[in-house]
Image 1: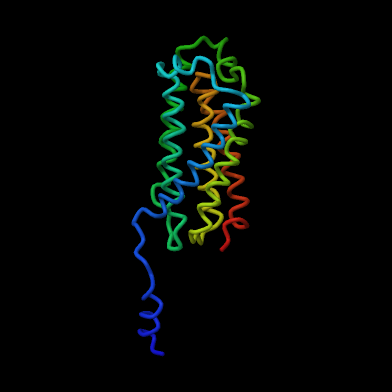
Image 2: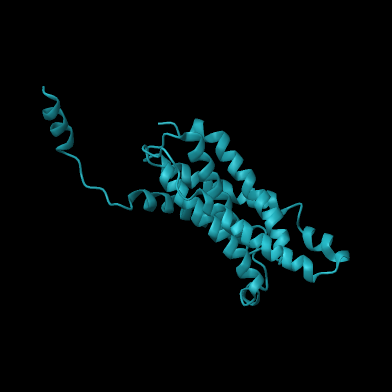
Length: 213
């Protein structure tokens, strides 16, 4: 059989795929895992009792702005790395933007706060538990993303795992906001980011093993 005839034979039964098929697949895994994490919060540690009131303040939206921005940047990277032709990741610098912006807000907070209160503002009331909770909430989300990758074809497995871990960690931190009462930008920048980093490291380690196809 000639090469051209073989190509035509293989392509004859293929169906067109939507341009956003990869994004939709990853979003499905992300949302499914996010629902599990949200249910876990609701029936274990619970929602913060003043959630509606907190949502009317700037501090809550600064937290959500930080975690959602990281989630969006990580989503873009994950979609790119889910393709077999992902030789170079575009937009990696976008992950630094929310970090820099939140750091600037944190510096303003410190400038407006007496030095004697800096430690309390940095540690808050839950600094020991926060990274672990963010990491724990990210596990079902990471599992949902692994399900998404089962029908995809990543080739840079470690990078894809890291991107998926970053996405899972950032999205779990977004969900954690419905429980966490901490309002300081320096708290969020430190302890939320630590939980997100742990999930990113997990994805980096597991990517080559779990994303192989």
